[in-house]
Length: 149
Image (tube, one colour):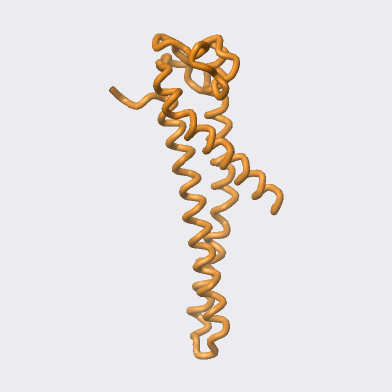
């Protein structure tokens, strides 16, 4: 059975947040290297220039990365809202086992078109802690980026 839309959306957001961590580390490492090269008087100016360009290239990745994180976060939130609305659950994040959807409940695709994909109670219960953590991290990451720029 192929992965559900909920699983795909959750894992896509998780991947973007891992990319954010990777790019932050890369930026720090490149900044340290540039600083070291600037302090070393024997370094070829061309080499320093190229490392500065790499640093700038890495910095240019962040706006589009945070835009994608925000888009994927909103997409996941909208998907969960549609699921809640269609299943009669007031809040997917706060649902109790009595109000959880049954395995026949279907949620529409994120854009409201196309075929319906089933989301069952077990999948929601399994992914909910990860979804909550990812949404919180994504919100914080975008907020921090926007406050700096």
